[in-house]
Figure 1 (cartoon, rainbow, N blue to C red):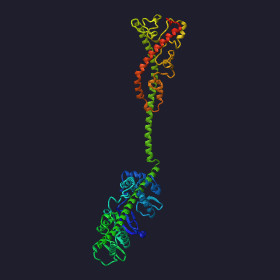
Figure 2: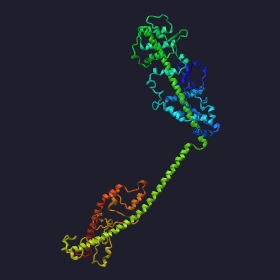
Figure 3: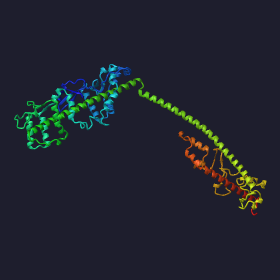
Figure 4: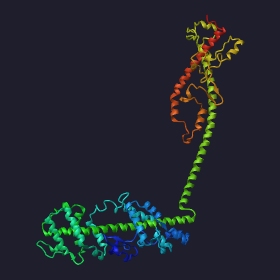
Amino acid sequence: MARLTNVYHAENINSVKIGRRQLPVIAGDNLMMLMDLNSKGLAIDSTHIKGKELEEFTRKFNLLTPDELRESLEIDSSAFLAVLNQCVQCVGCRRSVERLFYQLTLSGHPTLDPIVLKSSVILSIAEDKMKTPQALGTLLYRHHEVLNNLVESKLRNKTRCVLHSLDAFRSKPFSETWREVWSSMKQRCREELSVIKDTELHEVLENYLKKHKFCQGCRAKIEKAYNILVGETTTKEKGFVAALYANIKKCQPEQHIHVQTKADFIDTLIRRAEPEVNGSYTKQRERHAKTLEIAQEEVLTCVGMIMYERLRRIYVSLREEERACQVLAAVGVHALCRSFDMSVEKKQGISNLELLYNEISRAEKAKEHKREQKKLKKKKKKNEKKNSYRTCDNSIVDDSIDLDEEDVDEHEEEDEEETMSNKTQKEKCIDCSEDINVCPCESEGDVCTKLLDAGYGSDPNANSGTSSTASTPEGSEVSCSDGFCNHDRHGGHETDFVIDKFDSSNNHFENDPFGACGREKNLSLLQMLEDFEEMEDEENCYIPNEVVMEYQCHQEKVNQQRQELRETLKQKFAAMCMKKRVQLGVIDINK
């Protein structure tokens, strides 16, 4: 804790010389004490810098001219308050620092030397600190660490420090801490603090009697004990204890009393007054004064209350002013250092922040270039896949046509074998539902053979005049290939034989009866590939698993439907050929 070196009355403040690192502190209604920070020091005081730190700061120091250096080390009140509000969270500390800032600006006291507060509300540094880089660098060295340690170490919660919190004096009673402020005072300050005027003591005594509602007899006893203390009554009545007033001297011409500055006696007075000040007096004893000795103790309680309030007020003022000086010095140095760094960066032409920005920009550009290369590589692979898909799609179409021809050839071979075995096996005729061996249609030729040449039914007895009819859709000799016939879906008529159109421009089958792997829209592989290329998200370049699973689940069903469709097409094609022959007169239906 800072030292209290001098005491004086408020009206005599102009006659008191306030030196370096000194500040007046309020000690009473009309009493002032001088706080000395030379023994305590400020948070900005540190040892001289050397080595690399000194070399780096010297380089910055030499970049600025003397005028530029002086200008960079001057900040106005608005800039200072902006830094203060940004760095200090405690509201009480900010208000104390603002008050001290303007107080020192008006008075001009060198309380924060080498920090100077000019009458123009400008915060600067003493001229001698600007002459050498070592002196200035020592002052500005680790300014942010000093400020953070000072501010954060005193925080009790997020918004209040220990000094300005509501429970600042609840955790520890003042009767255990008053010795700190008492030991920081010089003897002259103690003696001046122990002088109590008669009028002040009488006022406190009257309020004390009214508060506790003493009876008339007790009140008279207490007033008599007061008169004996101040010397108005010289008669010593029965029951008076002289030892109780032994450490108090009366000064009747000056009309005041002097309390002895012994620490033990002061401690006794404070412990007497503490229950009364804290409001816990009801737990001590009843408020009666039946004897003069008890009345003397009540008067000593009032004396203790005066000393308690004086010491407590000085204790609070001393701690608050000391902290305000520390915070003001730390924030001021922090603001000056920031102004100095900005001037140096402006003189260099490029700031460290811009260097960091350029470095980050180069890293981002390199990352973007790498990302673009990756995209180009993916696009190249996609184009290769696209070409392969087109080739594969064309090959699939050719293979499907070849497969249909192979299937037809296989069916023709099977039909020939079945035709040969019809002579030994009993099967029913398609037209008349009779046994094929005794069918009346058997005499007309090979019409009643099973499934009629696998769909390639041709009239051996047809003349050249009917050859053009066979080239029409009704008489076409081309069988219904898989995916080319949809007459089963058009009205249900046996004569509605429609060959699906093959789109050569898009290389896909229209009206795909199987729905392109179970999708609602019929798409070819090329169409799916083109839709796939239009996707913006290149990370999802693959066939979804649900599509693959759906295709696998429907594969068996699709194969079964294909087989059933083949059988149906063969039967209906045979019936159509039979009907045409009947219409042409090749077969007489009445036979």
